[in-house]
Amino acid sequence: MKIATPIILTLICTLSINSLSAQSEERIAEIEQRLRILDDKVRTSPYSLIAELEQLNDESAQLGSQRNQIMSNLVLSKAYESQKNYEKAFEAVDRAWVLADSFDYRKLDYMLNSRKGFILLQQGNNDASIEYLEKCVALASKEDGEPAKAKALIQLGYAYTRKGDFDKAIRNLDAGAELLKQTKDEIQLQNLYGYMGVYYARVGEKEKALAEYEKALELSIARKDTSWMISNYLNVIAQYAIKGDVEKAYQYYNEREKLIADIEFPEDRKVELNIGVLLVQNEKYAKALDVLNICRDYYAKEGNIHRVALADHWLALAYRGLDRYDLAEERSQLAFAEAKENDNKKLAELSAFTLFQTYHWRGKDTEAIEWLQTSNEIKDSIYSEEKRQEMLALEAKYETFRKEQEIEMLKAKNELEKAKRGRLLIGLISSLLIGGLLIYQQISARKKDKVIQEEKLKIVALEKTQLQERLEHKEKELTIQLLHVAQKNTFLTQITKSLDKIKSHLGNEPTLLVNKVIKTITNDISSNETWDQFLTSFKEIHHTFVDLLVNKYQLSAAELRLASMIKMNMSSKEIGSLLNISDAGVKKARYRLRKKLDLDQEVNMQEYLLGME
Image (cartoon, rainbow, N blue to C red; front, side, top):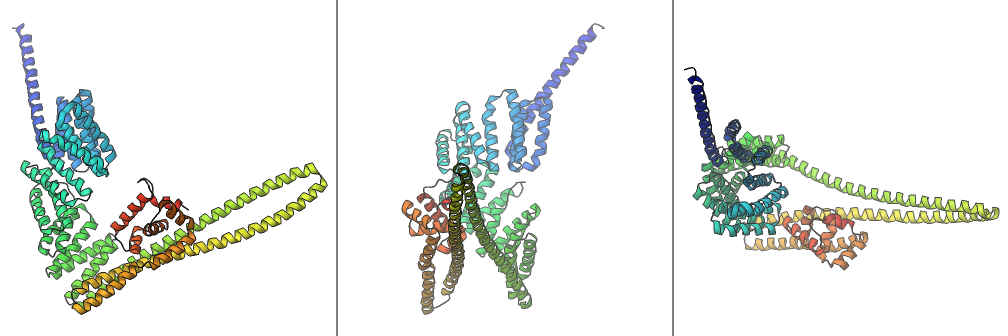
Protein backbone atom coordinates (compact mmCIF):
# COMPACT_ATOMS: atom_id res chain seq x y z
CA MET A 1 0.00 0.00 0.00
CA LYS A 2 2.84 2.37 0.79
CA ILE A 3 4.35 1.87 -2.70
CA ALA A 4 1.01 2.46 -4.41
CA THR A 5 0.31 5.74 -2.63
CA PRO A 6 2.72 7.97 -4.70
CA ILE A 7 1.39 6.46 -7.93
CA ILE A 8 -2.21 7.23 -6.89
CA LEU A 9 -1.24 10.78 -5.84
CA THR A 10 0.54 11.30 -9.17
CA LEU A 11 -2.52 10.04 -11.05
CA ILE A 12 -4.84 12.29 -9.04
CA CYS A 13 -2.60 15.35 -9.72
CA THR A 14 -2.47 14.54 -13.44
CA LEU A 15 -6.25 14.20 -13.60
CA SER A 16 -6.65 17.51 -11.72
CA ILE A 17 -4.27 19.32 -14.13
CA ASN A 18 -6.08 17.86 -17.14
CA SER A 19 -9.39 18.86 -15.58
CA LEU A 20 -8.16 22.43 -14.96
CA SER A 21 -6.74 22.63 -18.50
CA ALA A 22 -10.05 21.44 -19.96
CA GLN A 23 -11.94 24.01 -17.85
CA SER A 24 -9.58 26.78 -19.01
CA GLU A 25 -10.00 25.85 -22.65
CA GLU A 26 -13.76 25.75 -22.23
CA ARG A 27 -13.75 29.18 -20.55
CA ILE A 28 -11.48 30.63 -23.28
CA ALA A 29 -13.94 29.38 -25.91
CA GLU A 30 -16.86 30.93 -23.96
CA ILE A 31 -15.05 34.29 -23.75
CA GLU A 32 -14.30 34.22 -27.48
CA GLN A 33 -17.96 33.57 -28.27
CA ARG A 34 -19.06 36.36 -25.91
CA LEU A 35 -16.61 38.81 -27.50
CA ARG A 36 -18.07 38.08 -30.93
CA ILE A 37 -21.56 38.90 -29.59
CA LEU A 38 -20.33 42.11 -27.94
CA ASP A 39 -18.58 43.13 -31.16
CA ASP A 40 -22.01 43.20 -32.87
CA LYS A 41 -23.55 45.25 -30.04
CA VAL A 42 -20.75 47.69 -29.25
CA ARG A 43 -21.73 50.41 -31.74
CA THR A 44 -25.20 50.82 -30.27
CA SER A 45 -24.44 50.28 -26.55
CA PRO A 46 -20.82 51.31 -25.90
CA TYR A 47 -21.40 52.76 -22.43
CA SER A 48 -22.95 49.66 -20.86
CA LEU A 49 -20.50 47.18 -22.41
CA ILE A 50 -17.13 48.72 -21.48
CA ALA A 51 -17.02 47.31 -17.94
CA GLU A 52 -17.75 43.76 -19.22
CA LEU A 53 -15.16 44.09 -22.01
CA GLU A 54 -12.46 45.18 -19.56
CA GLN A 55 -13.37 42.29 -17.24
CA LEU A 56 -13.15 39.80 -20.15
CA ASN A 57 -9.80 41.31 -21.15
CA ASP A 58 -8.41 40.81 -17.61
CA GLU A 59 -9.73 37.24 -17.44
CA SER A 60 -8.18 36.43 -20.85
CA ALA A 61 -4.82 37.69 -19.55
CA GLN A 62 -5.13 35.45 -16.45
CA LEU A 63 -5.96 32.46 -18.67
CA GLY A 64 -3.02 33.28 -20.95
CA SER A 65 -5.21 33.67 -24.07
CA GLN A 66 -3.43 36.23 -26.23
CA ARG A 67 -5.99 35.75 -29.00
CA ASN A 68 -8.86 36.78 -26.71
CA GLN A 69 -6.83 39.68 -25.32
CA ILE A 70 -6.27 40.98 -28.86
CA MET A 71 -9.95 40.57 -29.68
CA SER A 72 -11.17 42.24 -26.46
CA ASN A 73 -8.86 45.23 -27.02
CA LEU A 74 -10.09 45.66 -30.58
CA VAL A 75 -13.72 45.60 -29.44
CA LEU A 76 -12.84 48.02 -26.61
CA SER A 77 -11.32 50.40 -29.19
CA LYS A 78 -14.65 50.41 -31.06
CA ALA A 79 -16.55 51.13 -27.83
CA TYR A 80 -14.28 54.04 -26.87
CA GLU A 81 -14.38 55.37 -30.44
CA SER A 82 -18.21 55.38 -30.33
CA GLN A 83 -17.97 57.43 -27.13
CA LYS A 84 -15.54 59.80 -28.93
CA ASN A 85 -12.94 58.91 -26.29
CA TYR A 86 -10.20 58.65 -28.92
CA GLU A 87 -7.28 58.57 -26.47
CA LYS A 88 -8.51 55.33 -24.85
CA ALA A 89 -9.45 53.94 -28.28
CA PHE A 90 -5.81 54.41 -29.41
CA GLU A 91 -4.51 52.83 -26.17
CA ALA A 92 -6.67 49.72 -26.76
CA VAL A 93 -5.41 49.36 -30.36
CA ASP A 94 -1.79 49.79 -29.20
CA ARG A 95 -2.24 47.04 -26.58
CA ALA A 96 -3.63 44.75 -29.30
CA TRP A 97 -0.70 45.67 -31.55
CA VAL A 98 1.91 44.77 -28.89
CA LEU A 99 0.19 41.43 -28.27
CA ALA A 100 -0.02 40.70 -32.02
CA ASP A 101 3.72 41.41 -32.42
CA SER A 102 4.70 39.12 -29.52
CA PHE A 103 2.29 36.49 -30.87
CA ASP A 104 3.80 37.02 -34.35
CA TYR A 105 0.27 37.10 -35.73
CA ARG A 106 1.02 38.97 -38.98
CA LYS A 107 -2.46 38.50 -40.42
CA LEU A 108 -3.66 41.08 -37.90
CA ASP A 109 -1.58 43.84 -39.52
CA TYR A 110 -4.39 44.75 -41.89
CA MET A 111 -7.01 44.86 -39.12
CA LEU A 112 -4.83 46.92 -36.76
CA ASN A 113 -3.91 49.48 -39.42
CA SER A 114 -7.56 49.69 -40.44
CA ARG A 115 -8.69 50.27 -36.83
CA LYS A 116 -6.13 53.00 -36.22
CA GLY A 117 -6.85 54.67 -39.56
CA PHE A 118 -10.59 54.70 -38.89
CA ILE A 119 -10.19 56.15 -35.38
CA LEU A 120 -7.97 58.92 -36.79
CA LEU A 121 -10.62 59.57 -39.43
CA GLN A 122 -13.36 59.96 -36.81
CA GLN A 123 -11.02 62.24 -34.85
CA GLY A 124 -10.65 64.47 -37.93
CA ASN A 125 -6.94 63.75 -38.49
CA ASN A 126 -7.38 63.06 -42.21
CA ASP A 127 -3.71 63.02 -43.28
CA ALA A 128 -2.63 60.51 -40.61
CA SER A 129 -5.73 58.41 -41.36
CA ILE A 130 -4.87 58.27 -45.08
CA GLU A 131 -1.36 57.05 -44.24
CA TYR A 132 -2.73 54.04 -42.31
CA LEU A 133 -5.50 53.29 -44.82
CA GLU A 134 -3.04 53.29 -47.74
CA LYS A 135 -1.04 50.66 -45.81
CA CYS A 136 -4.28 48.66 -45.57
CA VAL A 137 -4.70 48.74 -49.37
CA ALA A 138 -1.15 47.36 -49.78
CA LEU A 139 -1.59 44.75 -47.03
CA ALA A 140 -4.97 43.64 -48.40
CA SER A 141 -3.47 43.21 -51.85
CA LYS A 142 -0.95 40.72 -50.45
CA GLU A 143 -2.70 38.96 -47.56
CA ASP A 144 -6.47 39.21 -47.39
CA GLY A 145 -7.70 39.26 -50.99
CA GLU A 146 -10.39 41.23 -52.79
CA PRO A 147 -12.97 41.80 -49.98
CA ALA A 148 -10.39 43.35 -47.66
CA LYS A 149 -8.93 45.45 -50.47
CA ALA A 150 -12.42 46.70 -51.39
CA LYS A 151 -13.01 47.73 -47.75
CA ALA A 152 -9.64 49.53 -47.59
CA LEU A 153 -10.27 51.39 -50.87
CA ILE A 154 -13.75 52.50 -49.75
CA GLN A 155 -12.46 53.78 -46.39
CA LEU A 156 -9.56 55.53 -48.15
CA GLY A 157 -12.02 57.19 -50.55
CA TYR A 158 -14.04 58.41 -47.56
CA ALA A 159 -10.86 59.80 -45.95
CA TYR A 160 -10.00 61.74 -49.12
CA THR A 161 -13.58 63.05 -49.21
CA ARG A 162 -13.21 64.34 -45.65
CA LYS A 163 -9.88 65.94 -46.64
CA GLY A 164 -11.50 67.63 -49.67
CA ASP A 165 -9.36 65.86 -52.30
CA PHE A 166 -12.36 64.82 -54.40
CA ASP A 167 -10.38 63.45 -57.39
CA LYS A 168 -8.59 60.86 -55.24
CA ALA A 169 -11.81 60.27 -53.29
CA ILE A 170 -13.91 59.20 -56.29
CA ARG A 171 -10.99 57.25 -57.77
CA ASN A 172 -10.70 55.07 -54.65
CA LEU A 173 -14.48 54.77 -54.15
CA ASP A 174 -14.94 53.65 -57.77
CA ALA A 175 -12.09 51.13 -57.42
CA GLY A 176 -13.72 49.72 -54.28
CA ALA A 177 -17.10 49.56 -56.04
CA GLU A 178 -15.55 47.62 -58.95
CA LEU A 179 -14.13 45.00 -56.58
CA LEU A 180 -17.49 44.70 -54.78
CA LYS A 181 -19.16 43.64 -58.04
CA GLN A 182 -17.12 40.45 -57.80
CA THR A 183 -17.29 39.85 -54.03
CA LYS A 184 -20.95 40.91 -53.42
CA ASP A 185 -20.05 41.75 -49.82
CA GLU A 186 -23.24 43.36 -48.41
CA ILE A 187 -21.46 44.97 -45.43
CA GLN A 188 -18.97 46.79 -47.66
CA LEU A 189 -21.70 47.58 -50.20
CA GLN A 190 -23.62 49.29 -47.41
CA ASN A 191 -20.47 51.24 -46.43
CA LEU A 192 -19.91 52.17 -50.07
CA TYR A 193 -23.43 53.64 -50.43
CA GLY A 194 -22.96 55.67 -47.23
CA TYR A 195 -19.53 57.01 -48.20
CA MET A 196 -20.69 57.79 -51.76
CA GLY A 197 -23.51 59.79 -50.16
CA VAL A 198 -20.96 61.79 -48.18
CA TYR A 199 -18.93 62.36 -51.36
CA TYR A 200 -21.90 63.63 -53.39
CA ALA A 201 -23.05 65.82 -50.49
CA ARG A 202 -19.59 67.41 -50.25
CA VAL A 203 -19.38 68.14 -54.00
CA GLY A 204 -22.88 69.67 -53.97
CA GLU A 205 -24.84 66.97 -55.84
CA LYS A 206 -27.64 66.73 -53.27
CA GLU A 207 -30.03 64.47 -55.22
CA LYS A 208 -27.31 61.88 -55.84
CA ALA A 209 -26.29 62.11 -52.17
CA LEU A 210 -29.89 61.41 -51.08
CA ALA A 211 -30.17 58.45 -53.49
CA GLU A 212 -26.96 56.87 -52.10
CA TYR A 213 -28.02 57.43 -48.48
CA GLU A 214 -31.42 55.84 -49.16
CA LYS A 215 -29.74 52.78 -50.74
CA ALA A 216 -27.48 52.48 -47.68
CA LEU A 217 -30.51 52.76 -45.38
CA GLU A 218 -32.49 50.16 -47.34
CA LEU A 219 -29.60 47.68 -47.19
CA SER A 220 -28.94 48.28 -43.47
CA ILE A 221 -32.66 47.69 -42.73
CA ALA A 222 -32.59 44.47 -44.76
CA ARG A 223 -29.50 43.33 -42.83
CA LYS A 224 -30.98 44.53 -39.50
CA ASP A 225 -27.70 46.37 -38.85
CA THR A 226 -28.85 48.70 -36.06
CA SER A 227 -25.68 50.82 -35.88
CA TRP A 228 -25.71 51.60 -39.59
CA MET A 229 -29.50 52.04 -39.64
CA ILE A 230 -29.18 54.83 -37.04
CA SER A 231 -26.43 56.62 -39.01
CA ASN A 232 -28.19 56.18 -42.35
CA TYR A 233 -31.50 57.48 -40.98
CA LEU A 234 -29.65 60.59 -39.79
CA ASN A 235 -28.08 61.16 -43.24
CA VAL A 236 -31.43 60.74 -45.02
CA ILE A 237 -33.17 63.10 -42.56
CA ALA A 238 -30.48 65.75 -43.10
CA GLN A 239 -30.82 65.56 -46.91
CA TYR A 240 -34.61 65.90 -46.81
CA ALA A 241 -34.23 68.84 -44.43
CA ILE A 242 -31.84 70.49 -46.89
CA LYS A 243 -34.42 69.94 -49.66
CA GLY A 244 -37.09 71.53 -47.47
CA ASP A 245 -39.26 68.37 -47.59
CA VAL A 246 -40.40 68.60 -43.98
CA GLU A 247 -42.91 65.73 -44.18
CA LYS A 248 -40.31 63.20 -45.36
CA ALA A 249 -37.73 64.45 -42.87
CA TYR A 250 -40.26 64.08 -40.04
CA GLN A 251 -41.30 60.60 -41.25
CA TYR A 252 -37.72 59.32 -41.14
CA TYR A 253 -37.13 61.13 -37.86
CA ASN A 254 -39.99 59.17 -36.22
CA GLU A 255 -38.67 55.87 -37.60
CA ARG A 256 -35.23 56.63 -36.19
CA GLU A 257 -36.64 57.62 -32.78
CA LYS A 258 -38.44 54.26 -32.54
CA LEU A 259 -35.16 52.50 -33.34
CA ILE A 260 -33.06 54.28 -30.69
CA ALA A 261 -35.79 54.39 -28.01
CA ASP A 262 -34.48 51.32 -26.18
CA ILE A 263 -30.76 51.65 -26.88
CA GLU A 264 -28.05 53.63 -25.18
CA PHE A 265 -26.74 55.34 -28.31
CA PRO A 266 -24.16 58.19 -28.21
CA GLU A 267 -25.10 61.01 -30.57
CA ASP A 268 -25.63 64.73 -31.10
CA ARG A 269 -29.10 66.20 -31.72
CA LYS A 270 -28.09 68.93 -34.18
CA VAL A 271 -30.01 67.40 -37.11
CA GLU A 272 -33.12 66.87 -34.97
CA LEU A 273 -32.92 70.48 -33.75
CA ASN A 274 -32.84 71.63 -37.38
CA ILE A 275 -35.88 69.42 -38.13
CA GLY A 276 -37.74 71.08 -35.25
CA VAL A 277 -36.90 74.52 -36.63
CA LEU A 278 -38.01 73.43 -40.11
CA LEU A 279 -41.32 72.17 -38.72
CA VAL A 280 -41.97 75.51 -36.95
CA GLN A 281 -41.14 77.43 -40.12
CA ASN A 282 -43.63 75.25 -42.02
CA GLU A 283 -46.30 75.83 -39.33
CA LYS A 284 -46.38 72.17 -38.24
CA TYR A 285 -46.33 73.19 -34.61
CA ALA A 286 -47.55 69.99 -32.89
CA LYS A 287 -44.89 67.89 -34.63
CA ALA A 288 -42.28 70.54 -33.86
CA LEU A 289 -43.08 70.25 -30.13
CA ASP A 290 -42.38 66.49 -30.18
CA VAL A 291 -38.96 66.98 -31.78
CA LEU A 292 -37.86 70.11 -29.91
CA ASN A 293 -38.77 68.78 -26.46
CA ILE A 294 -36.58 65.70 -27.05
CA CYS A 295 -33.71 67.95 -28.20
CA ARG A 296 -34.19 70.27 -25.23
CA ASP A 297 -34.04 67.40 -22.71
CA TYR A 298 -30.94 65.98 -24.41
CA TYR A 299 -29.02 69.27 -24.33
CA ALA A 300 -30.15 69.98 -20.75
CA LYS A 301 -28.61 66.66 -19.63
CA GLU A 302 -25.48 67.48 -21.62
CA GLY A 303 -25.27 70.94 -20.02
CA ASN A 304 -25.17 72.74 -23.37
CA ILE A 305 -26.87 76.03 -22.36
CA HIS A 306 -26.58 77.56 -25.84
CA ARG A 307 -28.51 74.70 -27.48
CA VAL A 308 -31.05 74.60 -24.60
CA ALA A 309 -31.74 78.30 -25.20
CA LEU A 310 -32.19 77.69 -28.95
CA ALA A 311 -34.62 74.83 -28.29
CA ASP A 312 -36.61 76.97 -25.82
CA HIS A 313 -36.81 79.85 -28.32
CA TRP A 314 -38.25 77.62 -31.05
CA LEU A 315 -40.53 75.87 -28.56
CA ALA A 316 -41.94 79.30 -27.69
CA LEU A 317 -42.67 79.97 -31.36
CA ALA A 318 -44.33 76.54 -31.70
CA TYR A 319 -46.54 77.14 -28.64
CA ARG A 320 -47.44 80.58 -29.96
CA GLY A 321 -48.44 79.02 -33.29
CA LEU A 322 -50.87 76.79 -31.35
CA ASP A 323 -52.24 79.87 -29.49
CA ARG A 324 -50.84 78.55 -26.20
CA TYR A 325 -49.54 81.95 -25.17
CA ASP A 326 -48.91 81.09 -21.51
CA LEU A 327 -46.44 78.33 -22.50
CA ALA A 328 -44.98 80.52 -25.26
CA GLU A 329 -44.33 83.23 -22.66
CA GLU A 330 -42.75 80.72 -20.26
CA ARG A 331 -40.40 79.31 -22.92
CA SER A 332 -39.40 82.75 -24.21
CA GLN A 333 -38.60 83.84 -20.64
CA LEU A 334 -36.40 80.75 -20.24
CA ALA A 335 -34.71 81.31 -23.62
CA PHE A 336 -34.02 84.96 -22.73
CA ALA A 337 -32.51 84.05 -19.34
CA GLU A 338 -30.40 81.25 -20.85
CA ALA A 339 -29.19 83.47 -23.69
CA LYS A 340 -28.18 86.17 -21.18
CA GLU A 341 -26.36 83.56 -19.08
CA ASN A 342 -24.53 82.34 -22.19
CA ASP A 343 -23.83 85.96 -23.31
CA ASN A 344 -25.66 85.31 -26.60
CA LYS A 345 -26.92 88.81 -27.40
CA LYS A 346 -28.51 87.88 -30.73
CA LEU A 347 -30.64 85.11 -29.22
CA ALA A 348 -31.51 87.33 -26.23
CA GLU A 349 -32.71 90.04 -28.64
CA LEU A 350 -34.84 87.50 -30.59
CA SER A 351 -36.34 86.08 -27.37
CA ALA A 352 -37.15 89.59 -26.11
CA PHE A 353 -38.87 90.41 -29.41
CA THR A 354 -40.86 87.13 -29.22
CA LEU A 355 -41.98 88.13 -25.71
CA PHE A 356 -43.06 91.53 -27.07
CA GLN A 357 -45.20 89.83 -29.75
CA THR A 358 -46.64 87.30 -27.28
CA TYR A 359 -47.66 89.98 -24.76
CA HIS A 360 -49.02 92.18 -27.55
CA TRP A 361 -51.24 89.39 -28.91
CA ARG A 362 -52.46 88.67 -25.37
CA GLY A 363 -53.45 92.33 -24.98
CA LYS A 364 -50.82 93.07 -22.32
CA ASP A 365 -49.52 96.26 -23.89
CA THR A 366 -47.50 97.51 -20.88
CA GLU A 367 -45.41 94.32 -20.73
CA ALA A 368 -45.22 94.26 -24.54
CA ILE A 369 -43.71 97.76 -24.67
CA GLU A 370 -41.17 96.87 -21.96
CA TRP A 371 -39.96 93.82 -23.90
CA LEU A 372 -39.86 95.78 -27.16
CA GLN A 373 -37.64 98.35 -25.43
CA THR A 374 -35.43 95.53 -24.10
CA SER A 375 -35.19 94.01 -27.59
CA ASN A 376 -34.27 97.37 -29.12
CA GLU A 377 -31.67 98.10 -26.42
CA ILE A 378 -29.95 94.75 -27.06
CA LYS A 379 -30.16 95.31 -30.82
CA ASP A 380 -28.65 98.78 -30.44
CA SER A 381 -25.85 97.40 -28.26
CA ILE A 382 -25.08 94.75 -30.91
CA TYR A 383 -25.06 97.42 -33.63
CA SER A 384 -22.92 99.76 -31.50
CA GLU A 385 -20.44 96.97 -30.80
CA GLU A 386 -20.21 96.15 -34.51
CA LYS A 387 -19.63 99.83 -35.36
CA ARG A 388 -17.05 100.10 -32.56
CA GLN A 389 -15.21 97.09 -33.95
CA GLU A 390 -15.30 98.63 -37.43
CA MET A 391 -13.86 101.91 -36.13
CA LEU A 392 -11.19 100.06 -34.14
CA ALA A 393 -10.27 98.16 -37.28
CA LEU A 394 -10.01 101.41 -39.26
CA GLU A 395 -7.91 103.03 -36.52
CA ALA A 396 -5.67 99.97 -36.39
CA LYS A 397 -5.16 100.15 -40.16
CA TYR A 398 -4.31 103.84 -39.95
CA GLU A 399 -1.95 103.33 -36.97
CA THR A 400 -0.14 100.49 -38.77
CA PHE A 401 0.26 102.62 -41.89
CA ARG A 402 1.58 105.55 -39.83
CA LYS A 403 4.12 103.37 -38.03
CA GLU A 404 5.34 101.93 -41.31
CA GLN A 405 5.97 105.44 -42.58
CA GLU A 406 7.84 106.35 -39.37
CA ILE A 407 10.07 103.30 -39.84
CA GLU A 408 10.81 104.36 -43.44
CA MET A 409 11.73 107.85 -42.26
CA LEU A 410 14.04 106.45 -39.58
CA LYS A 411 15.73 104.25 -42.18
CA ALA A 412 16.27 107.27 -44.41
CA LYS A 413 17.70 109.24 -41.48
CA ASN A 414 20.10 106.41 -40.61
CA GLU A 415 21.31 106.24 -44.20
CA LEU A 416 21.90 109.97 -44.16
CA GLU A 417 23.89 109.72 -40.92
CA LYS A 418 26.02 106.94 -42.42
CA ALA A 419 26.70 109.08 -45.48
CA LYS A 420 27.66 112.01 -43.27
CA ARG A 421 30.10 109.90 -41.27
CA GLY A 422 31.69 108.60 -44.47
CA ARG A 423 32.24 112.05 -45.91
CA LEU A 424 33.69 113.27 -42.61
CA LEU A 425 36.23 110.45 -42.56
CA ILE A 426 37.30 111.14 -46.13
CA GLY A 427 37.69 114.82 -45.37
CA LEU A 428 39.82 114.09 -42.31
CA ILE A 429 42.21 111.82 -44.23
CA SER A 430 42.44 114.33 -47.06
CA SER A 431 43.25 117.14 -44.64
CA LEU A 432 46.24 115.22 -43.27
CA LEU A 433 47.67 114.69 -46.77
CA ILE A 434 47.06 117.96 -48.54
CA GLY A 435 47.94 120.56 -45.96
CA GLY A 436 46.61 123.64 -44.34
CA LEU A 437 45.33 125.50 -47.41
CA LEU A 438 43.59 122.48 -48.83
CA ILE A 439 42.09 121.83 -45.42
CA TYR A 440 40.54 125.30 -45.42
CA GLN A 441 39.19 124.80 -48.94
CA GLN A 442 37.76 121.38 -48.12
CA ILE A 443 36.11 122.67 -44.95
CA SER A 444 34.55 125.54 -46.89
CA ALA A 445 33.36 123.21 -49.62
CA ARG A 446 31.99 120.78 -47.06
CA LYS A 447 30.11 123.54 -45.30
CA LYS A 448 28.51 124.66 -48.55
CA ASP A 449 27.70 121.09 -49.53
CA LYS A 450 26.26 120.40 -46.11
CA VAL A 451 24.02 123.46 -46.28
CA ILE A 452 22.83 122.49 -49.78
CA GLN A 453 22.22 118.85 -48.82
CA GLU A 454 20.38 119.79 -45.66
CA GLU A 455 18.17 122.19 -47.60
CA LYS A 456 17.46 119.48 -50.16
CA LEU A 457 16.70 116.95 -47.43
CA LYS A 458 14.36 119.40 -45.76
CA ILE A 459 12.52 119.94 -49.06
CA VAL A 460 12.35 116.17 -49.78
CA ALA A 461 11.21 115.42 -46.22
CA LEU A 462 8.57 118.14 -46.38
CA GLU A 463 7.28 116.92 -49.77
CA LYS A 464 7.27 113.32 -48.55
CA THR A 465 5.40 114.27 -45.38
CA GLN A 466 2.81 116.28 -47.35
CA LEU A 467 2.38 113.45 -49.87
CA GLN A 468 2.06 110.88 -47.10
CA GLU A 469 -0.55 112.97 -45.29
CA ARG A 470 -2.54 113.36 -48.51
CA LEU A 471 -2.37 109.58 -49.18
CA GLU A 472 -3.36 108.74 -45.60
CA HIS A 473 -6.27 111.17 -45.77
CA LYS A 474 -7.44 109.84 -49.14
CA GLU A 475 -7.17 106.18 -48.07
CA LYS A 476 -9.10 106.88 -44.87
CA GLU A 477 -11.78 108.79 -46.84
CA LEU A 478 -11.96 105.98 -49.42
CA THR A 479 -12.40 103.27 -46.76
CA ILE A 480 -15.11 105.24 -44.94
CA GLN A 481 -16.83 106.00 -48.27
CA LEU A 482 -16.91 102.28 -49.15
CA LEU A 483 -18.29 101.35 -45.72
CA HIS A 484 -21.05 103.93 -46.19
CA VAL A 485 -21.84 102.50 -49.65
CA ALA A 486 -21.98 98.97 -48.17
CA GLN A 487 -24.38 100.15 -45.44
CA LYS A 488 -26.50 101.99 -48.01
CA ASN A 489 -26.67 98.91 -50.27
CA THR A 490 -27.64 96.67 -47.37
CA PHE A 491 -30.34 99.13 -46.32
CA LEU A 492 -31.70 99.48 -49.88
CA THR A 493 -31.70 95.69 -50.35
CA GLN A 494 -33.76 95.29 -47.14
CA ILE A 495 -36.22 97.94 -48.41
CA THR A 496 -36.49 96.07 -51.75
CA LYS A 497 -37.27 92.79 -49.95
CA SER A 498 -39.91 94.54 -47.83
CA LEU A 499 -41.51 96.09 -50.96
CA ASP A 500 -41.60 92.63 -52.60
CA LYS A 501 -43.53 91.31 -49.59
CA ILE A 502 -45.94 94.31 -49.69
CA LYS A 503 -46.72 93.76 -53.41
CA SER A 504 -48.78 90.61 -52.71
CA HIS A 505 -51.26 92.70 -50.66
CA LEU A 506 -51.70 95.47 -53.27
CA GLY A 507 -53.75 95.83 -56.44
CA ASN A 508 -52.38 96.10 -59.99
CA GLU A 509 -51.85 99.87 -60.13
CA PRO A 510 -50.00 100.16 -56.76
CA THR A 511 -47.94 97.09 -57.72
CA LEU A 512 -46.71 98.84 -60.89
CA LEU A 513 -45.70 101.81 -58.77
CA VAL A 514 -43.88 99.54 -56.28
CA ASN A 515 -42.09 97.79 -59.16
CA LYS A 516 -40.98 101.20 -60.45
CA VAL A 517 -39.62 102.08 -56.99
CA ILE A 518 -37.83 98.69 -56.73
CA LYS A 519 -36.30 99.23 -60.19
CA THR A 520 -35.09 102.70 -59.18
CA ILE A 521 -33.50 101.27 -55.98
CA THR A 522 -31.92 98.35 -57.90
CA ASN A 523 -30.48 100.74 -60.49
CA ASP A 524 -29.03 102.85 -57.67
CA ILE A 525 -27.40 99.77 -56.09
CA SER A 526 -26.02 98.62 -59.47
CA SER A 527 -24.86 102.12 -60.54
CA ASN A 528 -21.31 102.28 -61.90
CA GLU A 529 -20.89 105.95 -60.93
CA THR A 530 -19.74 105.11 -57.37
CA TRP A 531 -17.25 102.54 -58.70
CA ASP A 532 -15.82 104.97 -61.26
CA GLN A 533 -15.23 107.49 -58.46
CA PHE A 534 -13.74 104.74 -56.29
CA LEU A 535 -11.29 103.56 -58.99
CA THR A 536 -10.22 107.14 -59.74
CA SER A 537 -9.42 107.73 -56.05
CA PHE A 538 -7.82 104.28 -55.66
CA LYS A 539 -5.51 104.84 -58.69
CA GLU A 540 -4.23 108.06 -57.13
CA ILE A 541 -3.05 106.05 -54.11
CA HIS A 542 -2.02 102.76 -55.79
CA HIS A 543 -1.42 103.62 -59.47
CA THR A 544 1.40 101.05 -59.87
CA PHE A 545 -0.84 98.30 -58.43
CA VAL A 546 -3.71 99.08 -60.83
CA ASP A 547 -1.42 99.31 -63.89
CA LEU A 548 0.19 95.96 -63.03
CA LEU A 549 -3.17 94.18 -62.68
CA VAL A 550 -4.53 95.63 -65.93
CA ASN A 551 -1.39 95.18 -68.07
CA LYS A 552 -0.01 91.89 -66.73
CA TYR A 553 -3.19 89.97 -65.82
CA GLN A 554 -5.75 91.70 -68.09
CA LEU A 555 -8.30 91.94 -65.28
CA SER A 556 -11.84 93.04 -66.08
CA ALA A 557 -13.38 96.08 -64.34
CA ALA A 558 -15.28 93.78 -61.91
CA GLU A 559 -12.14 91.76 -61.12
CA LEU A 560 -10.14 94.98 -60.62
CA ARG A 561 -12.81 96.22 -58.17
CA LEU A 562 -12.65 92.96 -56.21
CA ALA A 563 -8.81 92.96 -56.13
CA SER A 564 -8.81 96.59 -54.93
CA MET A 565 -11.27 95.85 -52.10
CA ILE A 566 -9.25 92.78 -51.00
CA LYS A 567 -6.11 94.94 -50.92
CA MET A 568 -8.01 97.41 -48.72
CA ASN A 569 -8.68 94.51 -46.29
CA MET A 570 -12.45 94.58 -46.80
CA SER A 571 -14.29 91.53 -45.37
CA SER A 572 -16.35 89.15 -47.56
CA LYS A 573 -19.52 90.53 -45.96
CA GLU A 574 -18.54 94.12 -46.84
CA ILE A 575 -17.57 93.09 -50.39
CA GLY A 576 -20.91 91.30 -50.82
CA SER A 577 -22.81 94.41 -49.72
CA LEU A 578 -20.78 96.66 -52.01
CA LEU A 579 -21.16 94.41 -55.07
CA ASN A 580 -24.78 93.43 -54.18
CA ILE A 581 -23.97 89.70 -54.28
CA SER A 582 -24.35 86.82 -51.81
CA ASP A 583 -21.58 85.20 -49.71
CA ALA A 584 -21.51 82.37 -52.26
CA GLY A 585 -21.15 84.95 -55.05
CA VAL A 586 -18.19 86.52 -53.24
CA LYS A 587 -16.54 83.09 -52.89
CA LYS A 588 -17.01 82.40 -56.63
CA ALA A 589 -15.65 85.83 -57.55
CA ARG A 590 -12.59 85.29 -55.31
CA TYR A 591 -12.07 81.83 -56.88
CA ARG A 592 -12.17 83.29 -60.44
CA LEU A 593 -9.77 86.08 -59.44
CA ARG A 594 -7.36 83.50 -57.92
CA LYS A 595 -7.39 81.59 -61.23
CA LYS A 596 -6.83 84.81 -63.21
CA LEU A 597 -3.84 85.64 -60.99
CA ASP A 598 -2.61 82.03 -61.39
CA LEU A 599 -2.24 81.57 -57.61
CA ASP A 600 -1.88 78.17 -55.90
CA GLN A 601 -4.34 77.29 -53.11
CA GLU A 602 -1.52 77.55 -50.54
CA VAL A 603 -0.88 81.23 -51.40
CA ASN A 604 -2.84 83.76 -49.35
CA MET A 605 -4.41 86.02 -52.00
CA GLN A 606 -4.77 89.03 -49.68
CA GLU A 607 -1.09 88.88 -48.65
CA TYR A 608 -0.13 88.52 -52.32
CA LEU A 609 -2.15 91.60 -53.34
CA LEU A 610 -0.87 93.63 -50.37
CA GLY A 611 2.68 92.86 -51.49
CA MET A 612 2.05 94.15 -55.02
CA GLU A 613 2.79 97.84 -55.62
